[in-house]
Image 1 (cartoon, rainbow, N blue to C red):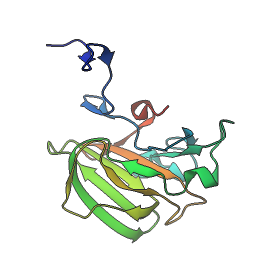
Image 2 (tube, rainbow, N blue to C red):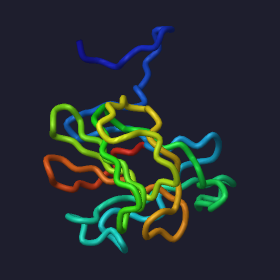
Image 3 (cartoon, rainbow, N blue to C red):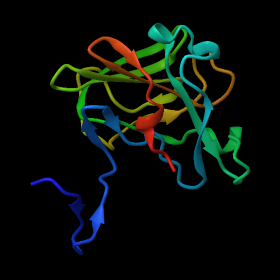
Length: 166
């Protein structure tokens, strides 16, 4: 086994989502157009201290200037970055509408906050890439974005290298 995955034409490709030893790999933000940009890094600003609030904030740059725009970020689909069971918390403080997904092995959990709309229910099993909500600005948020957290065995880790948004 090993080696790269191949598509139906026999060409090498990287799956959109994988769960590896490093964590869930893949971009949770799926805009129809524009690029996903990080608007706040891990462990800084409202994400400090990292062991509790560590996350990255993602939004959409719709005009190619490298900065997120409010209009481009509203209601963008948010997807699960790994398979797992959903827990929904609506109108929580400070996360607003939040979805957490725990993978079946019990090691990895991801959290998606500030959603305008949640499209899953607690107890539901979702697959990587499945839509779980729409980007918004609920809870303590200054504008529409996704607050994305990754936890390994109860320890908050930096998801920056895992998201791979382009």
